Length: 409
Image (cartoon, rainbow, N blue to C red):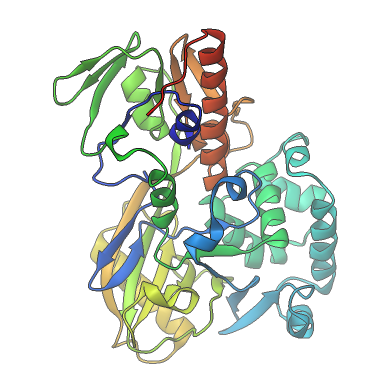
């Protein structure tokens, strides 16, 4: 994103990436004809900055159902958005999830957050999400445990709900105003769309940076570069290593197991939450029900997501997951085949309420070195885009102040 805006201003740049494709944490692998995003990821369509810069039509977005199913009482219960799906009104209000008063409070919270500008949410007094749900919105413990803990826990990768209430409320507003979606061809289509707008000779893949010191960039190839400015747009921990920062961003992890199946036990593009934890699984999605291109014709792709089990042995984790899935779906799961397991220790920046965030969306480490990434703003695609935009704008201002003529290709 940063490179795109610099390029539009005619400011020369080179983008180095040690991977074989752009995208960082947003990658999609092809395995046996299935499209596997590296971890369960979605794009929230009303992210304010993101929707300005992405072409949603070209991404061919496929949408999730506005709401969720909650596995509780040996069945699936619907928690929908009656304002979008009138047929969900009675099933949602009659669902054995929390109390009737909780359903009314969700509508009140929705109305209040819709009335607030996104930037206003981030100026509110901050507190952990769990405290906001209890004190600010006054939900019952049963509603928190059965719905909000798996819902926000899955989004923020924080089952403790100690993450910032500001981020939780911002995400809730995004779900209420727009849709969760994925590109038909996988999440990697998002960074690919941006990269296609850049001169191909300005992107060097499979090129690792060994160090950034005093504005000097040393590559793994042995090359040494002396750019006027350097933008370090890696994840927080890698940035800390490159820049020898005393403190780098902490991260939360997730494990995603992808299964193929001959029959789809869900058949709907819906997020299913575990409301009565009886195993490691937090949520499950039939990705092929959301976007059919994610699976070969006649096949189903299931995304099973686990929190807080990063150190469990793969065989034990798979066995525990399958045991829990048999409680959910009851049918024989003999046609389920594990395609791949992704253990992602650096999935999202830690967003605990007490941790400070950059007000600018980037950090100027030295006069010519900038730190850029969602770890500087909010752990999300929106945070990454905002940080890229703000970093580019700061560099453009410096370029203009230096009165350097733009590059003409």
